[in-house]
Length: 65
Image (cartoon, rainbow, N blue to C red; front, side, top):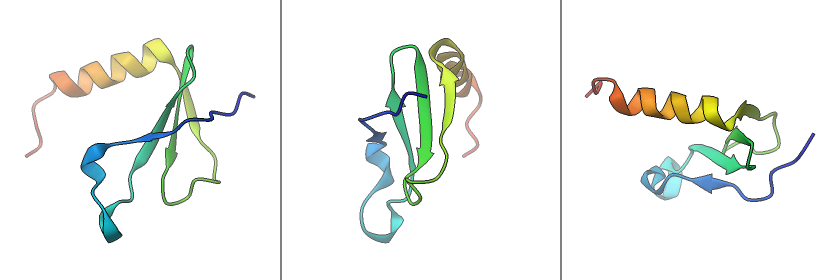
C-alpha cells in the first residue's frame, strides 16, 4: 500500500478547538481521506475519478443550509 506524504485540510476548518476536519491526500491515481484528530488511524482510499464524481455530485446538490 502506498502511504500519502502530503495531507491537505480545508481552509474552512478554522483554528483552536474547532479545527478538527478531514484531510485529503492526492496520490495521482487515488485519493486518501483521514480524520485530522486521529491521523494514525486507518484512511479511506478511492480511485481519483470516483472521488471527483463524488465531489461534483456534492457541488450539484441543493445546500442543506
